[in-house]
Length: 165
Ligand SMILES: Cc1cc2nc3c(=O)[nH]c(=O)nc-3n(C[C@H](O)[C@H](O)[C@H](O)COP(=O)(O)OP(=O)(O)OC[C@H]3O[C@@H](n4cnc5c(N)ncnc54)[C@H](O)[C@@H]3O)c2cc1C
Image (cartoon, rainbow, N blue to C red):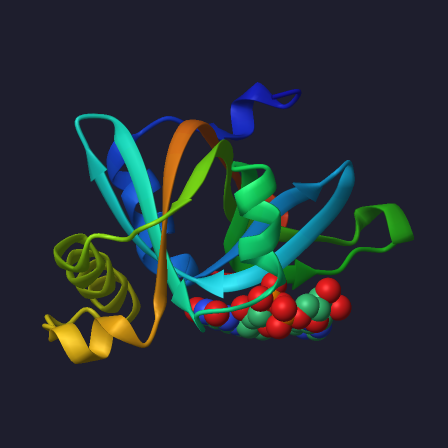
């Protein structure tokens, strides 16, 4: 990361970004043609291993691409707040964000699909939901195992923070 001072390494803050973003932009590559699709996600972060679960209809272009090439990239952002300045260059946006790389696979085991959907609903709603076999049979669940990721924060410029205080 070029601006090292903006990097976030604290796991609790990374968890807070993962809890807050709600939408993941999944980047795929179809024979060299990039394809980015926004999706809601659930995540687990255990012993340093980050895993996402996403769900959707049982058919669609993203599955066709993943079948050919399971390698993915992702990006998500939250707390995006625009700020103004005297000159165009002083305008900007504060944010927290996470980006990374990994592999996506279709979950076929019904038990793991149930787990993935529960994880997804927990991240999205903060609530615990369970799913039966019938419900899991009508959706696809993708598991995304993250190989590497980084988190970044751009705070509001200090002058604006002081003015707002
Ligand atoms: C905030 C947000 C949250 C979402 N959450 C989910 C989710 O959790 N699960 C889920 O399955 N879907 C979700 N969607 C919809 C998702 O972005 C896709 O539209 C959907 O998953 C179908 O993707 P696909 O690759 O199977 O496309 P297909 O339905 O096969 O269609 C392929 C083509 O349709 C067009 N297309 C597909 N998606 C979009 C789009 N979002 N906007 C404009 N054009 C599009 C593109 O041209 C693409 O090449 C969400 C969308 C948004 C904006």
